[in-house]
Image (cartoon, rainbow over all chains, first blue to last red; front, side, top):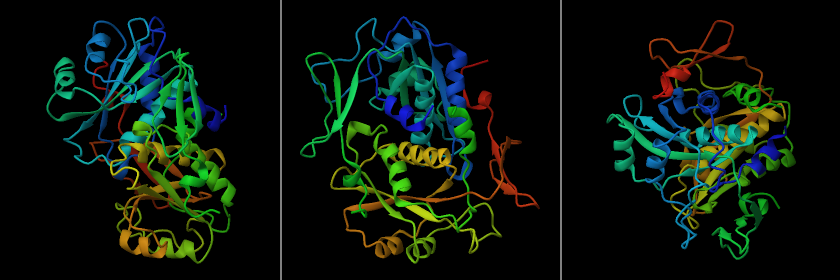
Length: 191
Length: 191
């Protein structure tokens, strides 16, 4: 395995083979990758809540909004929904500021998923009060993100961004297109 | 290569073989990994400034504070300093909120470095006004982090956290010890 191949394969997947289950051991293996990753001031205030079965999966699904730019799509239909979720939490009793740990941990988890032929999507558009109630969170645990996980069934193509338009889009064959800035555009002091 | 091995090898390194240079092509290869990683709303507002030579390296070094918990250590001495830096910026003309992109990108860059037998450390304790002046940043580019990079020459050991004490420490042989919470401590709904 080469890291670049893994990162290229790690697209934000939003449609899954819902019947393909993810065992708890696999989910905690991915969380272990986040655990072993860097943490600001080494505080390690992030915690994780996992779900890989019904009716909890459906309850979590009901708290999420999907793919803001796809206005005529309400999210994956029954049969294409995630088969597991990792809810990322911040333990405010440990630290109120988790700095950039959230992104580091999410990236480690998703790369782990892709290495095991799964994939997922980081979701920040969450009905947090509703989800807190569903998973019975104590007050000191704050929801940061939900990582939706499953066996991807959609094709995602990365392409060169045109005219600064960064909105992803789907074509008539349901292929998901993701415009990316070029290396020259983002590295400010190379010719 | 296995992701877990790579993540385990990706420690926060703060002492380097300063004479081991990092070519610009290698630095931009690592930035390319960040470029190909997920971005909230696909906005891709992060930009990068690279340095791999003197006197710029020394100028950047003068803006950084190292290892907050090691009170009797002012950072790596001459000969053990980073041989390159990637300054991560947010382009406020694209987005004022970069969500968790910062951590995702930093993790991709550092995993790339480790795969190539380099390593580094995410530094957030930065004299930003001074650094902005040194690298002549326009106002719309805001400094988020500095990733210090080089060939690591220090031994870092991950160990089980005791009594909730998360401060890393160095022993008499200059081995760096990093206490980590257990998987059970951070996963709130497994037995």
